[in-house]
Amino acid sequence: MFTDNWNELTPEQRYEARMQAWFASEANIDFVSDEARNAWRERMQMLRDAIELKKPKRVPVLPNVDLLVPHLAGLTAHDAYYEFAKLEDVWLKFNAEYDHDAVASTFAIVFPGKLYDVVDLRLVSWPGHGTGDDVHFQYNEREWMHADEYDWLINDPSDFWLRGYLPRIFGSLEPAAMLPHLTDMVEPPVSGAMFFPFSLPPVRQMLQKLLDAGEAAAEWLQACATIDAKITATGKPSYIGGFSKAPYDIIGDTLRGTRGIMLDKFRQPDKLSAAMERLVPLAIEWGRSAADMSRQPVVMLPLHKGADGFLSDADFRKFYWPTLKAVLLGLIEEGIVPWLFAEGGYNSRLEAIHDPDIPPGRMVWMFDTTDMKEAKRHLGGYQCIAGNVPGSLLIAGTPEEVDAYVKQLINDVAGDGGFMLCPGIVVNDANPACLQAMIAAGKKYGAQV
Image (cartoon, rainbow, N blue to C red; front, side, top):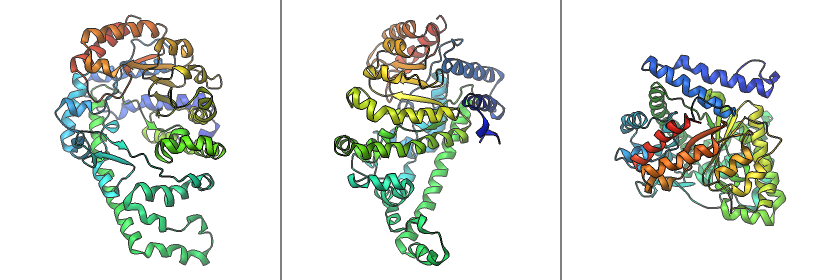
């Protein structure tokens, strides 16, 4: 909590408290110069103004990059997962050469490969472990949650995670399935039997693996935090303070999988809906706890299976939007700014997501292939929008084509504020000249609107 009387504050007061804490982080930054400090302040204000639908001094130009950073330095995805000592100079150079208005963070790109080795991660394949050395992680589509386990998830999510889901996605945690139902431990007479499984060799080995995983996680966290802090010191704010997901995506991405959730939508829709409702408070807590820790008010939600083509409009309104909306309202209630990465196209969703129950100026919609003029027509004056320079244009276009695209985009949607410029996708590869052209055009035309 930010204050002892947090529960007595209104959502607006909580929002203001989080914003003040975000801006107050200046005191903890060892800026490289007074110019860097002033640049940080100016960029912070531009970000806040855009979120609040005001017209900032200039349209903020944000990074949305991934493996592009190591690629431009001749490094591979495997290097980014394992060779942390190689990364600091690479990230500092990228952030110096490509003058976005925010940190191109390591946390979005650098993944803890050693940790994945220790826990024997099965949910995804990663560089050198199921994919090539220069291929990012890829989900392994399986039914990690069985079709008949909805009641287990609904009745006791923590127990399902501990004894059902985690032993399946982490090979080193398979012995967790041998643990007792911990909520049975309510009286002294049962304590002996409850603790007995911890004496079993597989469980003891699992506990040692968890200690080893903790050390690998600490190494990763220290490396990323050190690099990001040095970038921030050059005058670039860090703006994503946490992560959450839509309940439909939690189930469809990593529990039941795409095929599983599509079948459940027809075969057991009530169970699916009940499970998503049960996940709402957990998704809110993911974002709240992260934002509390980072002291940054923005929480990103990547949206995967709500895009055009995944669901009919009727099913989007029935299955996807209600619980996502509940998560958004819960985060906003906590003073948090949800940042929705609407991957793919949301052209058929624009009417539904302009929901009068969600207060205006309290979230950001970052669009990929959505028609930005239509997005502005539906959401202008209601929520901030961001995007959507195509990745294909940054890879195969010319600097002149990028300049023209950005000019038109800003003319179409930025005139009255509430807009941020960034690629519409997470960029793994790009023509450096095109990326520089996007930044330059954003600053040039974004200062003229």
